[in-house]
Structures are given as structure tokens and as C-alpha cells.
Image (cartoon, rainbow over all chains, first blue to last red; front, side, top):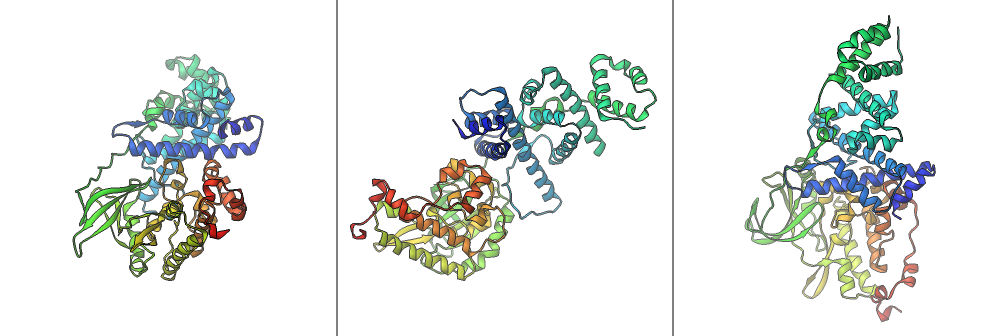
Length: 185
Length: 337
């Protein structure tokens, strides 16, 4: 049984500490994969969140069959990890542009070029944080979709809600975030 | 008159699911009766719903990253600055090392280390320059000189260093089956070298076997510490890269990381950091393994790794020796017993 499987089972049993263990593991794996791909892939190829997350899943959990809850926990951690990777990079790029020069190197520069600008990513992250304060579940669905690349259905499964509810949450969250982001522009 | 966000949410969803857009206005008249704020909020949401953008319509595409352009690969024969690349002699997760030839002011072979992508070149060079004077003042047979630093045409930092041909100290000791005494002699020389650097105010920050080479000079093994000034300039020691042990040859391994370095902050890194790493090196020279297993640290997850380094008591070397397998025992000289 892999470390991650052990942790996932622990989370299921209600072990709160186990959740703390999961994120760094997933984070590390995703960064590894992303850096590896960025270093070796030929130009023009894309770095898809879904592919990364699923590859990380395979590497960390392996072939062992998992129940939906476990997969849900994993994807939630993966979404959070991907979010941090992208948002951290975006914020640092912003800071650099403003002339800031952070000596504290928490994470190494991952030169990810996204179709959204760093500013947009930061705004999205802020808006998402605001949504989370008002409607945590809707925010979670967005996170899983945007950062882990899950479909609406998969995101619903990960969170543990019906397909219909998941679609509703997504529809609402999407409008909410667009409104929020435009409100700040 | 205020409203509840949940109210706005249900009205919004009902409108989207059950009412044609053309009838929204009339619908809102009914449902938001009198509550202008509520109506405005739902109208905002409905307007947003009707928009279209890449980010939310195609979530994967919106955040999809394109890979950075591939670095043009240097090749033997090419000139980097005034150095001519001869052959590739090493590669790590962070850098590639070439043997190169310098023509002026004197002709000699050097080692040229080109840092891979992901670094802010100006910062790296700047940090190196800050130490360059001190580095130039180091003059010790146990320290490999760093001569120069620059940027390639594609903007990557490179370092020109004394070419050290040999093997890592652990490899040397094992390959030649050095006794404990002989290992201690070599280790003492390493300590002298590091001491020299400390007296000049230079901290290495990344002492580990692959940075302590042993080269033969007139039949005598000479340990040389390499990469002085580089770990600090590239600051690799203190970043996530130190966790990428799975992909071989990275700079900085958790097993050699001192407790203050495991903090990932710049605070409190001083000469004692090097002393700690020297301690780990000594441990490995005497027992064949690091105090904390690389594997265990890597698997542990970040916070746990920090905790282990800071709090856990390593197994005593004497205990390790006693429990050692025949492979490790082979390095013990009969005279030790």
C-alpha cells in the first residue's frame, strides 16, 4: 500500500492530521511532474492540468483500486496544490514587475506560461477566496475544475454531491466569479 | 433593503433553468418585488452568466500552460564567452557541466557549469559577484577555485571553475577500501579546506559527497571541495528543488540539509551549517549511510522531513557498524579491529 493510500484511508477514517500530510506529498509530485515536463517537452506542447493531476494520481496511488471518496480527497488536494503552484508563480511575477524582489525563496521559479496573464490568475484567486467565504462548496467545484481539470460530474463526485447539484453549483460559481472579477476591473 | 446571497442564488438558478432569457425581466419583477438590491444582484449574475470567456468556458484551456521554449543545447566546439566547450562531463537536475578550454590570459582546461532554465540570471550573477572578491582570495589546495561567472547568449548563468578530475570522496573511499584511519585523514583535510573558506567568510551551504571530490596528485589522494560560491549564488539549497531527489543529481539533498536549512529561510545560515553537513559526511564515511535515510526523508512529506531533521536522534554510528552488512564491513581494515 502506498503512502498516499495509507493517508487517504486515514482521512476517510476521520483522521484530521492525515489531511495535513496529503497536501505536501501531492504538491511535491505535481511540481516534479510539471518541472520535468517543462524541461523536456518540445515547444508548443501544452501542460494540461488534467494530465498532470492524473499522472500524479497514478504515481502516488498506483493501480490500487480506490473508492470515490478517496479519489475525491486526492483530487481536492491536487486542485489545491495546482492552485498554489499557479497562483504563487503569478504573484511572484506580479511582484517582480512592480519592482519587488522577494529574497525569501519558498518555491523555485516555475516558468509557467499560461493563457491567462499573471494578473488574471491573481484576480481569479482573490475572487475564488471571496466566493469560498460565501459558498464553500461552489468554490470547491470551481477549484476542482479549474485547477485539477475535472469535469463537472467528476468534481461533483469528488465533493460528494449529485450531478444536478454539481451543475448548479458550477453555473452559479461561474457567474459569481465573472461578476466579481469584472467588479474589480 | 438587504438580501441574502442564498436568495440571490436560488432566484438566479431558477431563472437560468426555468425561464427564457427574454422573460427574465418579467420574472424578476415578480420574484424580487420591491427589493431593488436583490434584483440588481441577480441581474448582475445573469449578465455574467451570458458572457463567454476562455477561462470559464473551457477551464482546461484557460489555465493551460504552454511549455517554455526549449533551451538551445550547447555542444562541444561551441564558445561560451571566451571558453570553448570540449565535452560534457556531468549533468544534474539544475546544471550541466562541461570540460572547456580557456585560451586567454592563460591556456588551461576548466570546468564550465551552465545552469538550466528557471533561474533569474541577473540575480544569480549578482549574488555571485557579491562573493567574487572573497572567493578570489581563497587559496587552498583543498578548494577548487571558481574563476569566473557569466551569462550565455540565451541568458543562462554559467560558472567557470577549476577542473577537478576524480570521484566523490565516498566513492573513492569505498572503491579503494580505505580503513577508518585513512578515511579520517582525508576527512580532516576536507575540514581544513572548509575552515580556510570560513576564515575568508565564505560558507559553502551545500556540502555533500558529490561536492567533495578526490583527485590524484603524484599518487596521493587530494580531496577538493567544489562549488564554493555557487550554492549561494544560485540559492538552490533553499528551494523546492532540494526535494526533487527522485530525478537524480540534484543540488542539495535532504539527507545533508541542516535543521536551519530545512526551514527554507535565509535566517541563521552560518558556518555551523557547513559543520552540520560535514558531520553528515563523516557519518557516511564511517558507516556507509547518511544519518537519516534519503528515502525516508523524501517520502516523508515536507513538514515531516523538517521534523525528522530537527528532532530525531540518528542511529549511533557504532550501532550501524555493528549491524552492518558484509558489503559495508568490507571497508574495515584488519588493523582497525
